[in-house]
Every structure is written in structure tokens, then in C-alpha cells.
Image 1 (cartoon, one colour):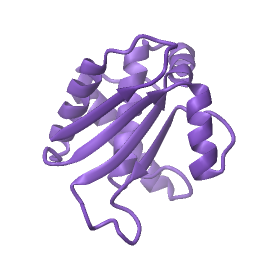
Image 2 (spheres, one colour):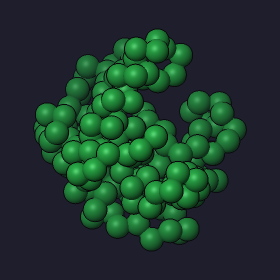
Image 3 (cartoon, helix red, strand yellow):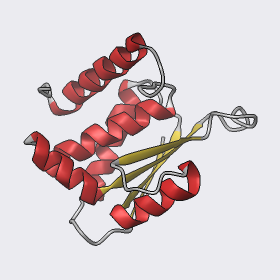
Length: 151
């Protein structure tokens, strides 16, 4: 299993070793041990630029996922899941608003991004698919943290 992590923001101290360990646990839980994934940790301006460039959304967001298994050439290297981009600034605000610690929010965003990479969806889809993703997020968070998130 290959997990690549790059932290290019300077707003918050992030323990990339913990991020790597948590992502490895998640991959193992999902039986994706032989897959590759990359995580880029950025600030709001950096994620806004990525969001604008690739999704034509001129605003920061908490997490973006870019699946390598989608599209016409998605089957060339199916072991490469794709990329997750997380804004620490937005994650920090979201954590505070939800009463979470930043590392808890980061774990949730890793889970959310990873689920998008493997085909889960909560946008422009059925209520059943949205619920399926929420339940998987809760299950994985519980496995990772040994407690449930409250909504």
C-alpha cells in the first residue's frame, strides 16, 4: 500500500505520520491494501485555486477528491485510487463549528474523500445513496477512533 502525503500549508501544524497511519488503517478496513492514494494538505487559497481550475467553483471547500479510476482511462492502473485535497483552514472552522478537534475533522475528511474515490456519492444522487455514504462514514470513523460521531 502506498500513501503519499504532502503538506504545503503553513496555517496549522499537521502530524503527517498520523494522517498516514490513519489512511493505512482505512485502506485496510476497506480491503484496499494494494492500492495507492495521495493526500495534499493545503490552505483555503490553495484549495480555492484547485476547485476553480478543475471544478469551476471559485471558492474554498474542505475536501476535494480526484478519482483515477473514473473516465475512459480509469482501468489502466486500477490500483491507483486517486488524490484527496484537504484545506486545513476550512477543516479547522468546520471542526470548531461541530465541537470537534482538528484531527477528528481531518480523519472525517480523509474518510469522506476516500469514499468518493471508491465510488460513494452524496451529490446529485438518491437519498438512499446519500444515506449509504453517511453510514459508511460513521462506520469507518468509529473503527478508526473507537467512538461514534454525533450528528
